[in-house]
Image (cartoon, rainbow, N blue to C red):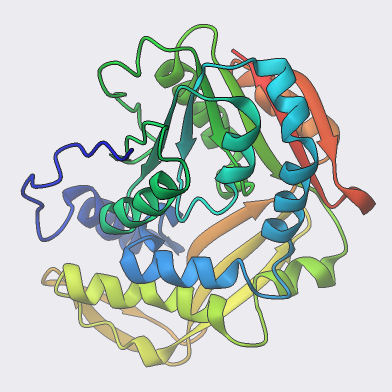
Length: 318
């Protein structure tokens, strides 16, 4: 059953936080933007397309892991928890978890409101007896859970290795925020990608079909649409590189030529070869993952590793 909250609340034409982050990010050198702003409706659709690409292994590998191990997760967590999924997107992996743990409610949290409501309706149809309560919010900030959910024991669900988009300090802050949002006695099931062959990593973020490039460039189209930007999108190219020192894939938008443009009537310029750093995707070793969780206020309970050390899934308690 789908329980909607504030669906008809007025929405601003441009999110003030979006404007602030973009203006601040473009004012830096080198320029950079937070990855959360990829996910307007078109960005969310493109990301779901990315997850189906042959090069993009994380979704395929983690889905197989959830199918194989969610029964073990349920044995540890017990029934009756509200599952709170951070950055739910299309929630394609979620049915494996919900089918295995007998939850009391499902609360998907996502910043893309229309996309969130549509995917929630699909999942509610799959689980007609389960309360589904979508919350439109930026999960990197404290999330106020709906009345009635807050009193339930909770299981946070953070699949996809989205934690890798943050630096270590940002990831620790996010884990602490999640712990605060979920409350005492909570558990967290989190996916973390592993360090592996560089060729496999780069191709996962620079696919042959160009879908990831379209996803990256869509950020510029969103800036033009929502912030009155005049960025010549065709003057930029997608770049994905491996930074070995930081153990991460970096996504950039590189200017093909010198460009001048405005965002919300503020003038910017970039030289040919200059980039906008749009995303990181950190990869972890086993010790890294456990240290990160403990620093964020979580104690690892169980860990499952995919074949060839491709991916890790960790269950932790607050």
